[in-house]
Length: 79
Image 1 (spheres, rainbow, N blue to C red):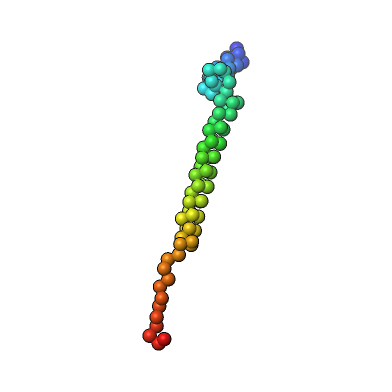
Image 2: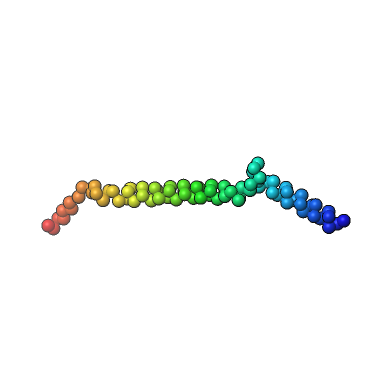
């Protein structure tokens, strides 16, 4: 009797676990790869933002080299 009750309890636990992670069609979210797709999309967005930020920093720090400031002359008293 206890073996049957244990099997029934295990089956109920498995179905409740399975029902939490399945869609209405019966397929698991993990088997379809949906969380991984969102993770890859988010990491791609982070990478693109970092690349654009690095290019902006390079332009901000590098472009003033092409437009130099006026040169100031220093004249000493001893000639």
